Length: 381
View 1 (tube, one colour):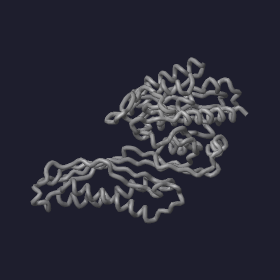
View 2: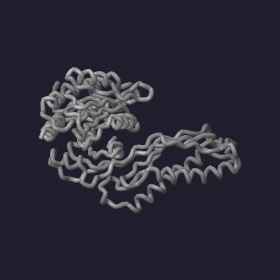
View 3: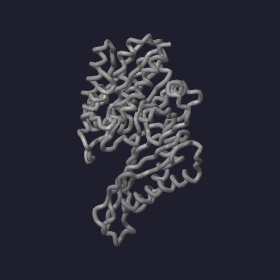
View 4: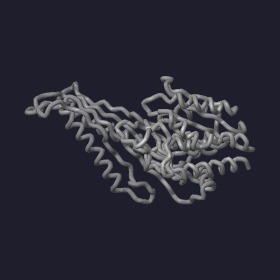
């Protein structure tokens, strides 16, 4: 298959994050097996999804991981001009859900396996395809653990998220949380003896604004991020039953997007201290009240490395010597936390990700293919 044909096949699998990805994974396993390449599946805890990784070339330490995720965001509610599950070419653009984010990179890696097998590789190429990147990088955690247990020790990881083939050396981390305030309902005319969960939640939400303002005040533009500080945000608030009743419950989901060098655990500790202070005031009025808090996802930032092998390799292959960081998160921080040198470098523009009529420019598919062929040549020397 050509990269375009492989992309069409991958796009045809509906792998929205709420669905299983096993049909796609089994296709990849069978395709690799038809070429004589053995792959290993690392399933999700419930067995409904799986990661896949495989090695092409010598069974040796080092080598390069080509990392891609297989899940895509939903299309519900989006106005598409063509079937999102049928790759459609119009005006030099390949339309389809996941074409850009990030089945384009996956397709290039898989389509070029025959060329990898024909090359005199001195170091291995590891293909690594994960599940549930879009909902907290869940699959990569399972896959990295399995790869480590197999004794793999790559010299570099290339995460093929859309970067227009620029070498991206850093991104923010993602900490997602859920807070539920359990209040005490009374008539609002006696709010003094009630515990209004919505108003308590409002105080906690305002805490996020205050902390973000502190971050902004001490930020410098030197790190290259936009904005150049860790951001805090509340995305969903649910609570209350009537305007004249102090709410018995209020739930909100919130996040911190943390710049490299700051610890997400520090934000959790600060927030827990705030919760303890607020909860003590609540219980003084009604002992049965309280606040439930959970971290739903914790994905680390990826920071620039000193003399990073992955960065040096990709700069040689692309000729890109610019400094690039991105605000969106990837699995890169997890690979880096495992001790593996990591960069982001893949075809496509992140502006197209998650959008209706998502597309990958044909020129970007070609640029990614040329990059992969240069990588094969590099590893054959």
